[in-house]
Length: 576
Image 1 (tube, rainbow, N blue to C red):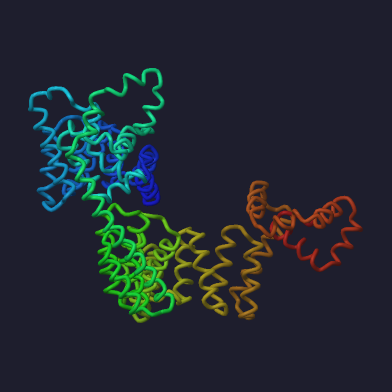
Image 2: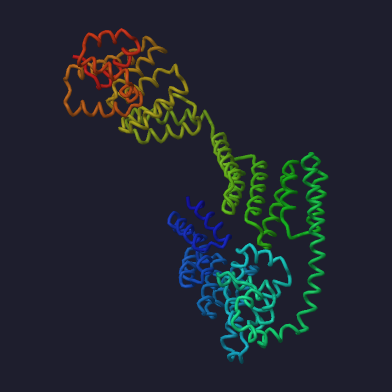
């Protein structure tokens, strides 16, 4: 399915496996070629690999399919920017902001595009520029940092984010941060290579250690006073943040303990304090949502889940956490459902959760919701009175030999009352007249299932099997019907016609072609296959050909006799 391939692509993209993401998105596009979101996602993956031509083609296809979708213009702007066309990028971002003025991603993209355009018009820098500065200007910068597990943690550090933004504004400032080990990790992620720290490189370059030390850049940066105070201030903030986070974790653990004891009010108090202490972890919100769900406070649960999803996307939280919040929201929506239409938002929410993370529990909840919706639709549509009216209309059309029109009315009658065996019987007769024998057989079997004593079901089924030249099966059907209605002339006439056809086969009064056709159909019957593969029956058949006396002894066994009769009626064995 396209959604499954899309989910795999999203997971691969989040893990930084952009080639795999492109492959999965391409599979999804093959299955759903008009889905604009798939082209948008693949464009982002191409951009992350700096394959901007391909990213531009997918972005153009995105806005072509969905011209009123702001995000598509964000992809278009990113691709243009990657190709160095800042003017076109600015136009694309501005178009997107016309559609969605509050979109932060488009605002940031427009700012980057305008800065790039301004730099392209400015005079070239007078030396000192970092050779790596350009890699911080690409639109895929934040996506790559989010995809890598190590740099994803750095994004929670305010000084790190400020450092990256400073380099984006002025790439020449990068030299100021080369002594920060986090910067070496960032360069490695952006260049898709493993980077060693500065001390490792110094140790590895042993031929000229004397010449390395007096290099101007490191010697100047060491005594620089400006960067010194900032880390000291930030470390104090980080210490405070760690303490608050630790307190929040203790509150969460206390909430978990209260939840296990079914002390829901206490659990809510602990989770609420945890969210106040640390707003960088959405698990407190999803846990509180779970408590509300248990308490039956579904509206509060939905509000917490919405907050968790919104805040989680801002924090670039793990996609599994986003999926969990969506699943809980879907569960609450399903609990609130009172009619079939009420299940639609729940189903949509479960589907969104599965695109974030394909969890078996979420998939089961989705299937349950879809099943409940279908059952409610049937219940809401159920009306025996209208069903009878539709059946009578079908009967009138059947008498007029307007069989397709009759089928339509019988079908509508079954939607209104699916448990009326008469309608299944009548529609089976219509299908037989139209030559749609497999469909007629299903209706006849359903008729017998609903009312085993209704003889019409057996006559319909037997007639269809007779037309399909399955005389042995038709004979069994007619015989079964006589058990419920021993004096039914239609059933007795059916048996007579079946025996007549079977005897014709035994006397060799049918053509070779017809015989082969009957035998081929019989060989598809699992019961016939089991008889022919039974070692005992194979010996019996050999004795019939080579040792008639032994064959007569075999026929004294009722089970063997029954199996031989089955082969005879199926046309596999002929008795002359």
